[in-house]
Image (cartoon, rainbow, N blue to C red; front, side, top):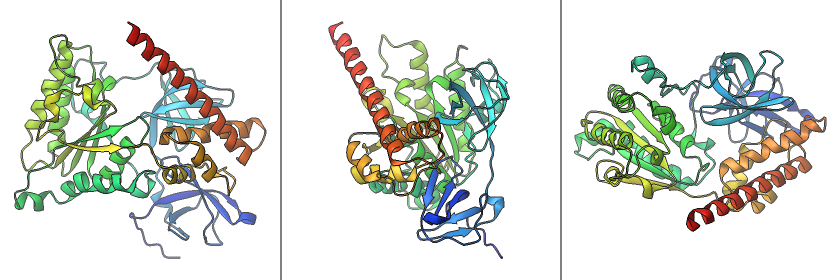
Amino acid sequence: MAWEIDQTRPIARVVKISEGENAVHVEFLNGNMAVCTSEYETDLHVGDVVYLEEDRLEIAPVDLWIETPWVGVVKLILLDEVVVDVGGNMRVMPRPSEPVLRTGNTVQGKGHGLIQRVLSEDPIRYLDLPDVDDHTIDQFKDPLNRKYFFNEFGGSKQIVDRARELIEAPLKYHKELEEIGARPIKGVLFTGDPGTGKTMLARIIASQAEATFYQISGPQIMSKWLGQSEEVIRRIFIDASRQKRAIVFFDEIDSLATKRSDESHEASRRIVGQLLASMDGFRPENNVVIIATTNRPQDIDYALRRPGRFDWEIHFPLPTRSDREEILAKSAPAGAYPGLPHSLIAEKTDDWSPAELVAIWSEAALLTVTDGRREIRSEDYLGGYERVAVQRERKREESEIKRGVELHD
């Protein structure tokens, strides 16, 4: 059979085939699972790599499935499973007999759930050393080892369309815009509650625009060495300016660039100053867009919101009912029984974030395996919803108590 490699179509790997239900369970490179009940080739087998079309599955070259190693920090150890923070994303995976793990270990793994070795007994931080070199900057580059697609974003189509206008188009058509004298778009602010897909959409845009992607968060870049944080920012912007296309992504920028005042910490004022100088230092030929996320835009230093900096904004609202149903269906694990009541759960989860919706599947999977089964049923799905709802209510009450204490003080 002759194969034609097509990187524009989503790819997945078959992990289970339920022939009696005409269902194929597949895994994406990012670890998400889906159940396909459309037509599929009769000679499919577990382990095959496939293209996902709207109404069918097609066999794809196995070379497209590249499981690159990942590095994460162990956050929670259960009887048979562990929770690992991989680049800010929490993953639940089987607990290995070897190596022996403890909370806080920095581990290396491969694929969706294979932990291979312990790299460090403690969490590794980027800026433990005083010198800033090319290796330090490379650690902030997300390699985007697989192709991300816009149909993986479970949110409003209007958000996607606006992001493509403001970010993808300027990166792809930089020369054309420069020729007609258009002012380049330097900074775009993603606002909205945590867990609404801001980071995911930024990765998708970088992948589709074939742009180098730098991901930076406040805790990662803060250093005990005087001036090192500013030097890292300066070097990242210089490195980005050398790329054909680049996106510099600041996660939760309000923790890094708060409003300057007489009471502000000196380190914070220096970082804001370096950000301003770096953004203003881009020349017209530099094909770089800076994206920053925040759920507290009012806390960002006002100078960063001026024209030529973060003067464009895209708000990420909480998903609508139809969005929630789509997110639940897309994030369903391979072991989810076909025909689960996504519509019912979507109806019950008003004002829930995508991250909270995905958490339902983790709880449902735990209920399934502790009951000695390997297929998530409706009762597990509903039980997972109830568990997350209880945790969500507890967090809400704690937040209200904390807010009341702060107001009283």
